[in-house]
Every structure is written in C-alpha cells, then in structure tokens.
Image (cartoon, rainbow, N blue to C red):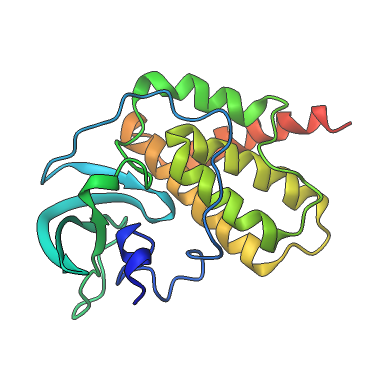
Amino acid sequence: MEINQLLTGQISTATQNDPLSGAGKPVAPSSAGDSRTTPVFQVGDTVFYGIHGRCKIAGIEERSIGGSVLHFFRLVPIRAAPLRVGRQESAIWMPVASAAQSGLRTPLQEVELDRIYALLSNEECALPLRTPWPKIQPLAEAILRNDGPVGLAKVEGYLFLARQRELAPAKGMIRFAETVHRLLVREIQAITQESPKTIDGRLERLLISKLRFEA
C-alpha cells in the first residue's frame, strides 16, 4: 500500500476491488462546489462519502505512518439490505485531518432538495458529453467528492444525457450510472420517506425535461 495514497484516503479495505473506485488520479473539483460550512464529525455520525454513499463513523483510531501517529475515522458503509450471513462489512479508513477535503460530508438536507431537482431538469451539463468515459470517470468521481449533495445531481444529469447519446454505452459507465442513481434515490428517500419507485418516477420526469435543451 502506498503511504501517500493512505494519507489521502484513496485506499481502503472496501475499495481495493471496487470497479467504480480509483479509476484515476483525482482531478480538480468543478467551479460550483458545495456551499456548506465545513462540518465537524464525531463517532456515531451518519456521513456520506463519494461513491460509497452513506456510512457510519464507527470509531477513531491511531495508525503509525512514516514515523508519525495519525488519526483515522473508521467508516462502515450503510447498506440498503443486510449482508449475507457470515460476511462482514469492510471498513474505510479516512484521515481525520483531511476528511472534509477528501469528500466526507453530512447527508442531503431537506432544504437542498429544490436545488437537487433543479439541477436534474435544467440545461446544465457538468461534464463534456463527447469525451470518452475513461477520461470522464475520474472527473465524475471528483465532483462526487467535492460538490457535496449537488454533486450527485450533477453526475446523474450528465450520465443521463451521455447515455442518451451513446448507442452502446461503456459497461463501466452503465455500472457507475446505476450506482450514482441508487445513491441519489437513497439520499432523497431518507428525507421524503417515499418509495424508491415513486422517487424513480420523479427523477425520470425531471431528467427527460433536460432533453429539451439538446434540441
């Protein structure tokens, strides 16, 4: 394991075999980032971390790296369905000092829903549509890390338009799109308490309205 990768929170026991993680070196965030104040995280908090979605801060532990003692959050992903018997959820280790900069954030808040819905239906497209997916994926991951809850909506909107243009979307794009959509639905459901089917229908109507700007 590379020391600098561990220090930036890019390697964890949960992501080493994840095809949706680590597609490339993180890039600069988009210009319209999250306007929230920097949160203070504590053990027991429910947080949101990029492509992993909702996690619980299960503890804070010390690790010795290069002769220095550093503190790490131990994050445990919160799954919609329990794991099979005998399987244990892998932890994600996040340096406390750089948690917010690495994309750890509080979950979506109700006051943010209107902005999320607006981003899903307006003319904005966060990423270039004609760029190949392997170059786009690290950019999309950076948006998820750096743009807070609106990052999910931005990436969801881009992926919808990109898949409309592609006759045969890359398998990696399809998997990524499915994961982002699932995370967004779960974020909204935690606030509205609606069924996933109801939320799916609303998101589809909003996204379809985005197509009128493509004409």
